[in-house]
Length: 622
Figure 1 (cartoon, one colour):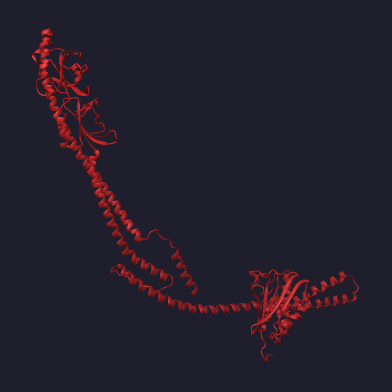
Figure 2: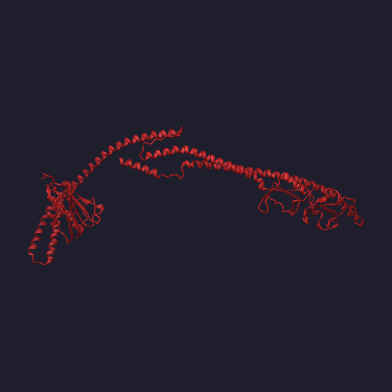
């Protein structure tokens, strides 16, 4: 039972060694978990803050763009209204009205003079290119426009659709002539039938507007004016690509990308009373610059918070894992049989209470184990004694049964076989005598018959010797003499070589000479039979001062490992002939004389070596 407890401890140790282990300890896992949670929270807050900051920046930028375009829209609408009023006043001048009615040479000269006078009078005349008088088909009747400007043919209804009732003048769309943006203002001549004036003006006011935009939005803002159909865009200085309108936009704020990949935000609104659009755009990077700066500052703050959180989590994990590590080491030590472990935790918290409880538990376990081992040791000793007694009783019972069986067998064999064998021996002797002149093969068969009779007599003798337990008649005897005597009796074979190393000066042994001769003869006979007729038989005798040893070695196949414990059992044999009593009888006789017969380790060359051990005869031994 002690062995069972030891094996249980080994199993526990094996379980500790082979239990599944996580890849990361709590000391590392806890900071990682807390750091991961902090990272998720910080990332979520950062994304939300970024989105809100971007939304606010875009909203502010949109409001500023809308404010700028609204002011420009109102300014341009007022200018367009003034230009329409001025055009209507020119159309109502009497010379033009008279020419519309009479169209003679005198009226023509007066109308042309009135047009020229209008081109040099009034506000904003510097932007006036010239004035034309056209008919309903759009053909020019009178014109003060320089011949170098090829103005297009236009009809009154093509200038702009009327959007306000009572409009007496209309503003037309832009076009570029000689890289100059010009636009028409048309007004019908009252009572003039199909005649109307078309006053051509250059696009002006760009410098003032370009100075207004930086004050409203910033230095990177750009101002554009163009036609509603997108046919022409100008920055008040020349023709330029205009901003791209997003059809899906509902708030007038458009995002687009110019050549070169730079993105812009633009506010595009129509100018009332004109076919124009006014637009102000702003680089999107300028809008996002504060947001990006905010994100960088937020990232630094988040990184600092993450580092501080990881440091705090690491400190907390160490305060947790160090006591756990002490408890784990103590538990493993107890599992390995060391019950003197004490857990001392310096904290004044639950871990210190747990450590004290663990130390108390270890002391109790050690005390209980010591008591259990003492009880187990006592019970194990009693059990071993009982097992030895049971084994001895079992061996004795088996021996008695075998002896009883062999006794019955030997009794029948002794009466039924020995007499016929004796008759057969006498018959062979007689035949050899009377057939002295017989052929050689007859004598050969007689020898074979004699050998078989001798073998049968040996088997019968082994049976009787094993069954009869005669007390030995012990007396001093020399091993060398016993070996020489039994070698003369041994039925030798021509292929067997014999080597004897038996010093004659060895002290005598105390043994029954008959038993000694029977043991030696059995060993020699088994060795010769094991070699199958060829090999080397070696006999050696030695003394160690109290016991003499006789070793018989052969060069046969040896004894298989699984048979080494069985060869001394009665009726066990690996030979084709024999009943397996020779070695059993020999060991019984050796032990009856105070010695033993054993199978020693086989030599490297093969074969088997049997050792007979007998006590040395002391002085005065009988």
